[in-house]
Length: 389
Image 1 (tube, rainbow, N blue to C red):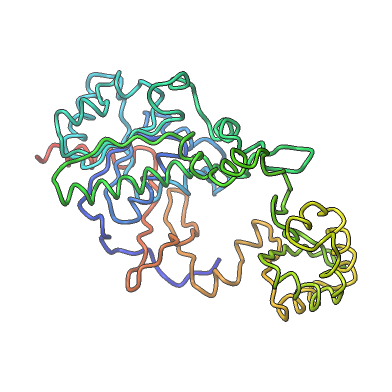
Image 2: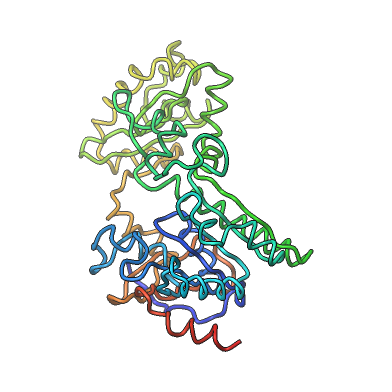
């Protein structure tokens, strides 16, 4: 993971925007980290002594948690007991200076602390609030605890993921990430609207509804087709051939065919078996899906006679879309990331680490990748700033 740049010192397009976040775990921190990367001043309110529970998830990054270093660069950490009178007074001063207030506390906790969206915006109509929850306000699930796996289950994602025999969760926090992205884009939209009208906004994002949006294809497929997409492991549920095949040297290559022209070229150039094109079992995509086991067996048998280099040569000649099935460690060394110079150093309390540059590249602007904070690192400086006014 080489790098040639130091962390950017530019102010960023959100410079001057103050975000106060009562956040923990993944969804809200993911949203506010995007804002911090754009230059917003994100003040992260953490519990004294323990802080964000994500700090304790693991110790794999030089003693720090992998989730925490991923989600919290560029923020200022303040330790604050928001249940005490003194803590609530400081929190009130912070919110008075904020442009945006984000929270993903337990259901009802913000209201009990006196920082519910309705009260805050009644006092300051220009304020943008963003409430993140598992299921949203109202309804029978509004007070339910919600974690990523649970939302994947409730949204039906686990039912369509995995092999035919074994439903599986997605291997990363996809419900949290979806929620964080909608919170982030919602906040950007509200900031744009406030610039035009002077009015703030009360945003609400639920994990169930965020992941529900990402479930649009299987949802429509099921509601109007009568059956859910079948679990197909690493293959595609409704396209064939599409998925992993292993060459004779043990290297797995994933194929992606999209249309009949590609199917013909695949048979002619890659498999060198043009008779498959006229085989009625494989006459069109629906037929190939219905006869997937037979088709996959034929392809697997032919691929087993190739080295991976030969398979890739033929796929390039066709040309057919493909991908090597990389491990996470192999992805970290991906030649495309290296060629595009996508790694940067980020300072943390335990030393420098490497992190990927945010995926949106803005011509002429180097990404802001500021340090990951120690627990309470900025308590004194933030309190001093509050007293300055």
